[in-house]
Image (tube, rainbow, N blue to C red; front, side, top):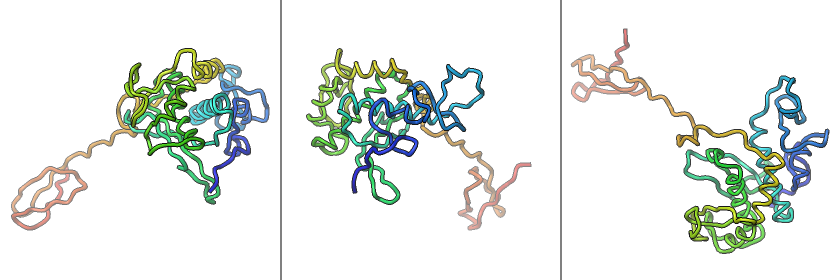
Length: 269
């Protein structure tokens, strides 16, 4: 199978690399920027600021994914000469167990003609500063670069080639999250190198309007990514022969060991 090529714009499902092709291609009107957002029921983009009198609903999905795709395209264009193939950005994660991960060839088209790698970001981390989120995204893009053009090690391992590329792009890998940590290993963090390429590209993105306005409030609070299930209320089960009782959920089925018959549910009055 061959990797999907960037041949059209996001309207058709594939986005071209580069800032100019990330958001503006979504509208035939042209002149759009990263600050303008998809709205429900409209084929184009409108700005919250420029149309304050229009009653519309902003699409949360668009506001979440368009800035991420825009950043991904900008990194590809600015740091990798636009040579990296398109990939699939997803939001996955549970609590704070994993900030992000990369999987090569994680998706394919229904006709099996194309495959795409995946970068999964945990939206619980979107409470971080914008620069930290972009550093996390670039961390995963370097994995993508290494799989396409470099020599990747076993899954989730960060080898010397990956570490050297991170440093060249302006991110310092560290096993501790601070200065002095190991630069290779299984679980790695990163921080910007002062005056490096990442700082410059990141500042340009933020100046041009990059912003993740939505946060995962369940995951960010340390809870599960799904609402907790309500514990079923206990009810009384009784043996119709000896009158022994047991308290259990309504959905269970119980039996009396002494009498050898099933217990019956006592409905509350």
